[in-house]
Length: 291
Image (cartoon, rainbow, N blue to C red):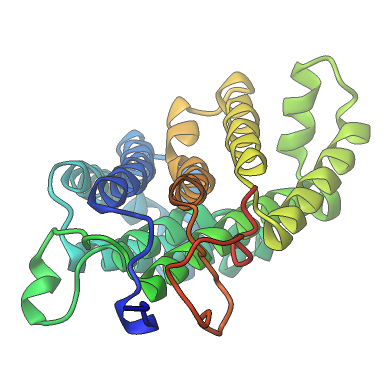
């Protein structure tokens, strides 16, 4: 009997779905634990973001440890038992905190660059089992992914990876963020000259992921993000800033894992709007462009 679109089961079996969930959970947990630790330490620069909603400096400094402790608790809860409703809240919270930066007068690219913070919990939310009111308090991941869920999660991670690379690149190429110049100077490079070159490279890398996100390209993006974000503590920033960017590592890694699961099963995995006429049969991937 020939399979139909309704009966299609993606190559992601229960084990690979669980592994993907762990990748996203660790990335999300790192984001909240890192952000929470910065709050517990009392990051003075955050007072400008509190001011956006009319909260004064002294009140903000008093609230930071409470918000930080809550963020750390949420991060630990994701590692132990992720709750679907809380995961959605975490996505919304991260989006709001990212938008506070342009609202406080910083570049819009600061919010774009933090796509890993809100894109990863969105992908995890899509991965978790839904369907009725009870599932909002549930923690179960879906079983083997159907084609539609596979496509949605793939696109969520794909767009997230593109945005975080594009945002970081634009901060160097267009904004010329002083912090980046200082970081490159630590490597013995002329920061003012290197910064736009690195920014342009990251914009091209984002375009490559958008057009054809091969597995090797995505692993390269993971290594690149780990290396560039590691410059933050070396330049004097808190180590927790590196940890806070956990979503920037988890998004390309999670997408690379999806491509690996697809290639291993040698099954068609389209991300186009149309379903293949014979889903489930072996063929060449077109949607994610995996190699």
